Amino acid sequence: MKSIFLILAITLAAVSGFGQLEIRNEIEEANAELSMIYNFSVKYSLSILKGEGHEQPAAIDNNGIYQIFLYTSSYRSGVARHELAHVYFFEYLRSEGLNPDEIPLWYHELIAEGFQNLHTRTNRPELRAAFFDFTAFDKRYPQKADQGVFYGAVSSFAGYILERYTYRDLIRVIDEISDEGDINSAFNKVFGSSLGSMITSWRLVFLLPYSPFLIGVVLFLYLLIGRRDKYWRKFQLDLRSLEEDKETKEQGIQ
Image (cartoon, rainbow, N blue to C red; front, side):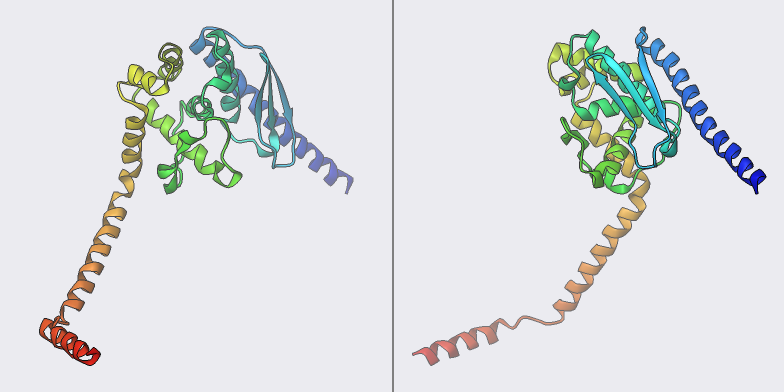
């Protein structure tokens, strides 16, 4: 019995250790990549905790002192990249004389999601992500029930941009915001299209795989409405009867 418990303890320790090692390797690789992108390095403290499976990873900016909290119990590949991307973006904004709060929250997440999935293709988010207005969240996150679709939409939009431009272009938008003072103008300057136009194009690309289904739905509705219209046409409207009925009612009133 003791040997069984010993084997179990060693196995659990190995799993926990592997989780921490995986996270540390990922964040070290991300740090090297981000320092090349931004041309500077950031000091941060990393806390890797076991957690209970429901904790959220976080990158905390305490006036330029950065802390990253990650949890092995709920860890997913790429999360360390995501949180460190937040830290570097915070520092970059400070170097440009900008308060991180001046940049829309959704754009912070666009930067982080873009870097998280820079070398991998994300899973296609649920269909309603295409219709979700993630740009409405400038200062606060959506309610918990909508956070999954929010991140799905942001990640998909980031992927759309990065298939056509570079990660540095996403950062250049901030430079243009400093000059133009408006994110739409900044998008126009960097990408040659307004934010609204790019979101519309992304939605069309996003919905393209669903087009056969959508066409089928439209065709079904068209046929259904057409059949109902054909059914009611069988009942001819007798205008003469209506006029006679009207005259009868008028005589009755008199």
